[in-house]
Amino acid sequence: MKINNLHIQLNQLLRRRKFQCYCVGTAKSGTHSIAAIFDDNYRSGHEKEANELINKLSKFLNSSISQKEFTKYIKKRDTRLFLELDSSSINYYLIDILIKEFSNAKFILTIRDCYSWLDSLCNHCLTDEVSPFWHKMRDIRFASGSKTYSKEERVLEENGLYPLDNYLFYWAKHNTDVLNTIPKDKLLVLRTNEISSNLDTLAQFVGVDPNTLSLEKSHAFQARKKLHILEQIDSSFLQEKIDEHCKPLMEEFFPKLNLSSLN
Image (cartoon, rainbow, N blue to C red; front, side, top):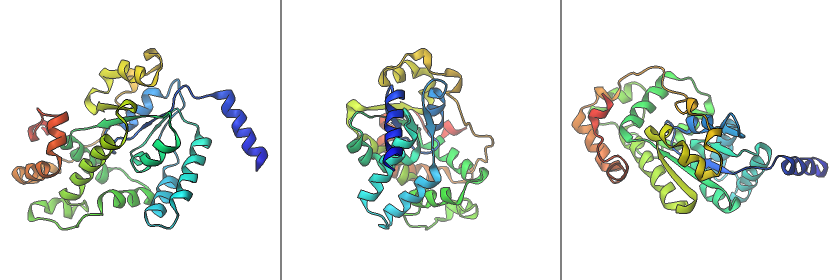
């Protein structure tokens, strides 16, 4: 075991990280694109070892393992993967540990307007096959609230989706927590629709040459099919729910957007 650890340490010294950065945006906010932008020239990963990470996270949240055990796992995982850019929506649940254990790390929050985000998420949940671990992750994110559907949400219930409250509460909490938790000098906020026009800003933030980033990969993992689920919900009801949960952040980051932006 000691020999193996020594080998890992020597390997790290030979490789060295040019930077250490975590993308902590929500699912469907551009985390895949961020990883792809760095992929050509840096050790970049999107949702690496996600199934194992979700399993450990679930045990931690259920108090099956302690914070000390979970932190030890996160540190060992980092040593093994040794990524320069680690991009995953799951990283949100690791923020406190990442800030404490990796003092030089920087963070990127990709933030997408809640209208197109919700539309994209519904499409993804209904069209993309995922592992049982990712179904567990959806429960972690969205099942904490009441699973009570209003009559206006019948289309969500019929399609096995969560109520609007559950999705929109998560969107607001995830983004607000990131903004309030990570020190401002360590955080770069990028609107999803502006990722490709901010490669210079992104490069400067992590301290690399902008020419080493790939513009062609800035639109990775776009949706293959649109189901127009939200169009089947009464627009006044939908807007009321959005205002209830998301209005402060929407006014700050997307003041000109409204429901018509989906069309």
